[in-house]
Image (cartoon, rainbow, N blue to C red):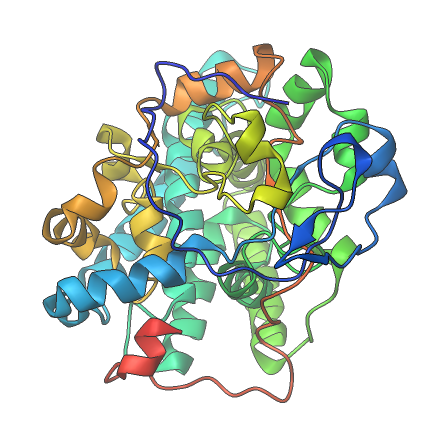
Length: 400
């Protein structure tokens, strides 16, 4: 499988491989066992469904972000000063939450199956709730306040217009995604083998794009469960109380507005393109790269530098975000400017809308176009782990 290049991405020139290697997990060309330092590689078991059908990109290399982070810090030590909370975040969140409540009030007597209701939900509501999704993403990295507890509680506030409590569970799943990028069984952003089998067609991919918010909501719980903590209980209680108040004071149509806004935000909406754009492989992958035995990295994170970043906490700067999760959204452009030589030649997207279009209609791009690893990473948010304060970032924390 070799996805072709498109106008959405720029192709990066070949550069020396600075990746570390981890244990082998598959077969090389012709079904032969790959060699590692002259010895047979470890043949780790893959899901039989993935072997029978078209496979993912399996790699033996370490995820690229830690390696690049260390190199950037060595070349530009001043980037560590960009780390830390952004005070503006809380004001943006409160403004968007207020906007959604205002819209729910305006639509309280509007028929649900009417053009004005759906247009407002699609244009304003979905955009606002996608903004809140990404506010919760930002807050999960402790980037609204210095206090971890304040961040947990404020994420619950951002969650309110979404209608369904999820901010408390999102954080451990998302931080595990950072610590375990591409690791099968840990990174819940990865499609499962069943998704790759049943959705690997134009109709299947269209279904996935239409209902991808449901996949992102349900898939993590099918892979593994995170503990139910006091933050989880607070999240559920606050959301139920808010929903009850909306139903009591504004009525069911206002509540439907919140739910519809959340659904459309993760459906066929321009801003929803970021879900696919971030980690699906859109670049041309040569046979040499596709052979895991060669240990050549396949591009697995893509940035987007277009105007929609204004509405989405600069989540398009995704290579920059994975390289430095401790840098808030307002300072990611500065990180890109300071370390531009590390980012200028990386493949990147120019349009989230075209990302969705090509994902559905290009047979060389699809559910299976993800980089997977069998080992590495770690779970985040288990009961025996405590959150560290986000006051002063230590060097080993930045490089972790």
